[in-house]
Amino acid sequence: MSCVFEALCAHLKTHPEAEVQDAVKFLYQASFGGGHFLSDPDGAYLYLLKEAEIANRDAPYTEALGEQYARINLSALQELSPKTLFAMFKAFSEDTPTDKTAFLSLLDELENADLFDKAEKTAFLKSYRAAGCPAVHHSEAYRRAYHPAYRVVKKAYADFLPAFIAIDKLTAEKAPVTVAIDGLCGSGKTTFAALLQSVYDCNLFHADDFYLPMPMRTPERYATPGGNVHWERILSDILEQLPKNESFSYRVFDCGVMDLGDAVQVTPKTLNILEGSYSTHPELIGRYDLKIFLKTSPETQSARILKRNGPARHKMFVEKWIPLENLYFTSYPVEKQCDLVFTT
Image (cartoon, rainbow, N blue to C red; front, side, top):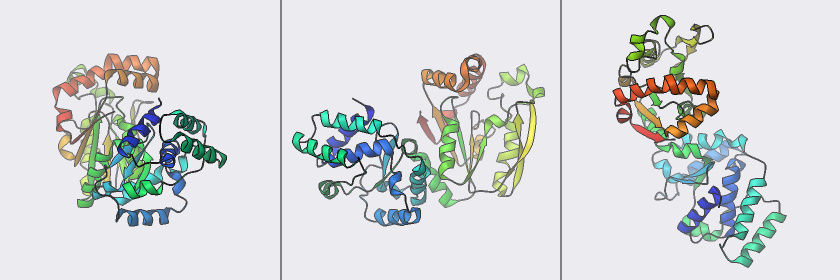
């Protein structure tokens, strides 16, 4: 049984009034997301606000549609900003898959499964395939029973929903807001930061841009937990500048010449994110409004680094960077001091 079909079966257990077309809708959204609704962005946002007024506030905030997509119920708008949810919905609306091969396989799986009345199901699927397998609405029975009100988004948005809720709360209360994303290498910090940047108009800084200059690369420095990042410059060039809410510049370490590169100009924005290992170093941790920690299993970490960096650099990570990182994590209660922790 496929992952998507397992998710459908779980959904049907909690939604016994669902009909065949509701199952088809679930499989369609799991295959193509929800971008087919977004022909008029302005109208779609206004409709979201209107629908939120009558949404079921008791519905679970999220429901996975397999591994790619998820439904975020409008009940989440009790804590999540409508603009944030709409930005999630919109971010990948132009990246909707068009190949129907996997979807057709799911329809076959549905037809062969012991679900619904067999004759009714066969007739519906025959007619549906003949029509070209378009998007479908929920059945009237489903609407009456469950009052569905949700948006389909990339599953990663649903997985990290507590972070979006926390950021929305902070940015509604103050400006600027500064967020740190620390965690194990290979845990997805950069990917998560990019996900946030796809929703928010924010400044994004990378701890990897603050490598130690050559004169500071001494045995004594590397023996200090967290000493292999130039945290002094992160503090002076970034974190001490952000509260001023003024334009500033900083220089990125250029590994090609092993020295500082050209200046990067920074414009004040409400949300500012620093991602990367050591971003919550003890000398930096007090500078953040929100601290997020990402972790993963050693096996997943190794596989991701190998895929991302290749065998030679994987060896360097195993022999040098991961031990230094582990020294940092065992020396300081980094995970415990973070406000949110995610396993990826």
